[in-house]
Length: 509
Picture (spheres, rainbow, N blue to C red):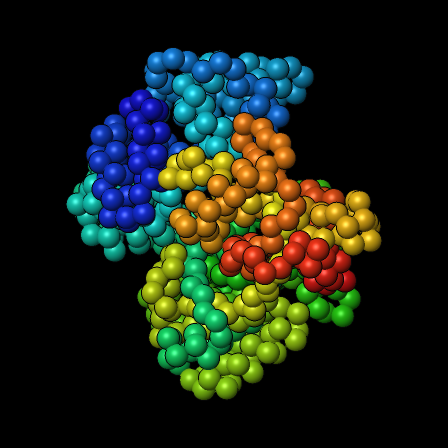
């Protein structure tokens, strides 16, 4: 299959809001793939090539982008083969950088402009096609005429949507259903929905375990005898980075176990350190002094017994038996007042909030109904629009991604009375807002490049965030976490926007 066909399909998927239309477009594409193209194509669609990251960064990608080809000729197999080649050349020593650059230039020279764009986003991990894994999983079921429950379960237990797709499309129903839980092979994680309060979450779940939501990094730990492996939420093996987690699990009175949990750094008083500090430690291969502490909230397998389909009440009891000192704090209740108290306790202890989990729920990858619901306080700030990037896909021709600035009244980070950039967002914008800001920002434009329009800093927008984190990317030393637009504030002048000092005060010292 030509790579152009993936581009055409992803454009169609991005251009529609209809989930059914997305599913059908993806299913039609999957039906046309050859068996050896299936896993690579699925990886490209969801921005997770089977080779993982192959060591190509922004500079390398930019340097490799020459004039595009006029005619589409690259195939899915061609791109997959080049990624194999780049991966094999990674860290190859003297001369390898030049050789990798030449391989990349040769690839992009054969690609059309739209194919170059897709290749760049795949290599840099920036695919945003709308072909999310949940939609694609539904498309696999449609294309293969297999039950959606079978496809979802096989994908969860194998941790590999590409291989699941190949099996669904080319194997038998029995082969798909035979995919089982294997200690040592990571499982796709269960995720939580959201609610405004612990009481509201409890109303949706009924009796539930209300547990502290830690501001840490998700981990999944597999032990088989003396062999212990630690995986990230994206199923990357990071065992070598977390010897303290390995030591904790090694001391447990078990032979085989699969645990789901979080790890984070604590200060000298036992309070959680900022998320960014945990993540910088979490991602470090070099020697470090900061210790990451593990806490577990679920157990999926225990000494030959799969627990995925057991109710949460049983899984909690087993977890309490084998890891009482490392179980995440929480209470089982059906009382909204108790749920709210646990939520207050979690926030007072410096954590993000709570997760409310139906006590009878089983474990299923992704967000499935209202079995797990997270509750976190939302902060809103009035910030100033500094620039806006042109959109793509369904937003082509519209100004979409906002550059957001906070007021710097004292000039601590720039000019007194100026604005310090603290992040970007394209989330929360309705079609009406997109049309309005496209027209408005061109009226107050001060300069532009091919992709961005800079504007007079006079437009105030109310932004909801989950918090801030330390960042060297912006001059104020912070970046917004999970920013989304609530509304524009026509009633407020830019001089009344929130300050960089106010945002920086959110950092836990």
